[in-house]
Length: 326
Image (cartoon, rainbow, N blue to C red; front, top):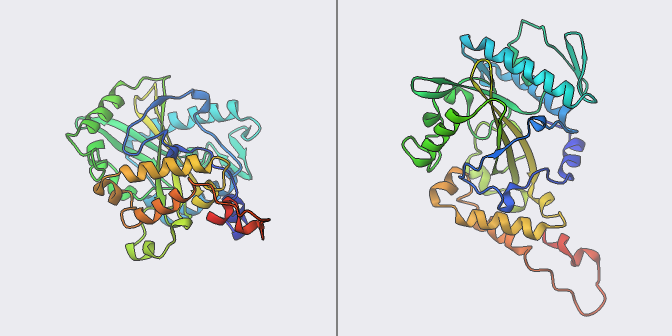
């Protein structure tokens, strides 16, 4: 999505969230209350990521943007609530001029009826937006602007209820305790009381648009040190007028090398290794790490032992210190 220079600068950034340290175990629901004023968290990558969103819609169409015909009112409610929140909470980023919002080098015409309200809303934030609607069979995916999917395709999930959406996830299939908990949580969610959860996985390329996992033969040749940790900040908000739920997904890509360059790299690496080690075979396969787990663990465990310094003067900084292990 970025130039080589942009990608390089992105790689040097410290992680925004570190759920892989053990604070957000994999395959756990892990909901926590969300302060509504922190619904969205635009950062310095807002402009480039909005450019990428526009490109993806132009190139992939309904593979990233779909909506049931009777969701227009819900989409408008989403757009109105987002505009109010963003212009109030982040006025230094979002400047409103009549029906136009100017932000990070982009302009969104709020009155542009040639595109869906959800399309307009999705061009305001880095997050993906998914509207869930309650029907006779449960909560289903009724509309979505999904530009940055994490190994799933909108065409395969659109219109399906939660049990079907989560069918491939070990321990979350229909009838499981986790599936029941999620449906119950959706039913009990109240307006004004949004919730948040974190999720993470391991990718083998630096790409926000990631609808499919890479082929096994491609993954095999990628060194563990080149892994990219894909962090998802997810929120759930009950819309007070229509009663639908807006599910947002914000993606952060943290190169493993950048994580292990952090001052607390030992703690982060150990936490990640502990979680990977606890995965069952089915869970590891679902996360795409079963073939690379041993290599990843060896790489992560390396940083737990400080490097041994020679008794004499060091011959060069590159032969000592943490950087030699990255």
